[in-house]
Amino acid sequence: MNGRDMNTVNIVGGRIVDSTTDAQGRPADIHIVDGRIAMVATPGATLPAAATVLDASNAVVSPGFVDLHTHLREPGREESETIETGSRAAALGGFTAVVAMPNTDPAQDSRAVVEFVREQGRRAGLCEVVPSGCITVGRAGEHLVPYAELMKSGVTLFTDDGNGVQDPLLMRRAFEYSSDLGITMAQHCEVSRLTAGAVMHEGSCCSHLGLPGWPAIAEELMVHRDIELVRITGGRLHVLHVSTARSVDMIRAAKADGLPVTAEVTPHHFTLDDESLRTFDPVFKVNPPLRTMADIDALKAGLRDGTIDAIATDHAPHADHLKEQPLDAAPPGMLGLETAFALAVGELGMDLRSVLACLSWNPARIAGIGDRHGRPVAEGEPANLVVLDPGAAWVVDRGLVASKSRNTPYHGRSVTGRVRHTVSNGRAVVIDQVAQR
Ligand code: DOR
Image (cartoon, rainbow, N blue to C red):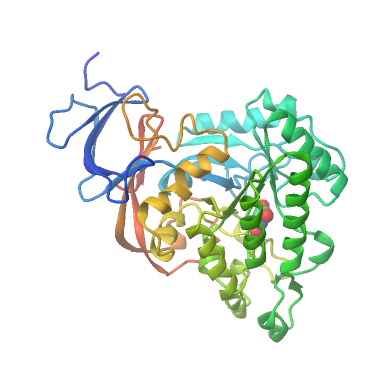
């Protein structure tokens, strides 16, 4: 085979930062053949020729990002996103894998739907689409899904996201299965009796605006319940979109007790607070709601000390005609894939390597795909990589997003940190910020 064959890529002039390096990383050139890293060479060494050469000068080469929390909307809600448009947004955001949330129509509670989602991802060919499975049939909270069945289709992360599982007995049984089968239950922590009709965080801003409030305790009760259920069952819990300071405290204590609990936080929960709702703009309505500055400080502290393992987007596209309704009628959710890296690197005050841990190798492990994502950049490893300009400034423009929907709360915001190239399964799917398919 000749080095100029289509399936070869060189990445030259960059500095590798991965789980084996320090924050400074090490300069290296990379040669990729047939989806794998074939050579990591000292800069200036001659690499075999390649069909595609990616310039990484003044840039960082890292394992690709893994999003634990992406709503792709297909099947059933293709007016807002499809697996193809969502995967394109993911690739542009530096993600080489996304976990697809199950609140599709039909929901991801059967092998047929799960395999459909995976296959559509394969066809789009922009990143790996990893379907989650529901905890309960139809996400209705009444009957458990046959987990072992879905495991045959490769599912290891189960969630009713969009809904929390309200029934403690059912959740106890789900954790018992989790323990037996070695799978993870990812909980959307929300006691729904406490949030009916709510549009924003319950606090002084909400009282001032006279809007129905969404109390922190609605999340914290379920975080507490599930941690205690894990303690008696040995099940594995991942807490989705943590939003309150007390939740962070409880997760920190659970980890100190050695319980198998992991957690994620979204960029919007550490960059925006409930004051945004003073605009009455539904683009700021999200579940769980934007909280207070004190909560933001606690989320950041949780990321810094490792209580929170991952940054996950909760990318939740909604078509204009759905989102642009009065606050009470508009669905909750905001875009996240294309802005996650910039918000994380620009706003957290963490060193780059720690940010990459939260965006890449930690979530890869939680998603059960650590054999192919978040890997060290080394010979023989799968080529799922991203090339980053951590210092590049740009302005978010809702008119330029790749997502089919435009509900970004960051329109017009100046941010720092940009994805230059993305290599998914050995193919350059983003080159110089342009998607190649
Ligand atoms: O804001 C949200 N939107 N939170 C969720 O849990 C669900 C999501 C959606 O599907 O739109």
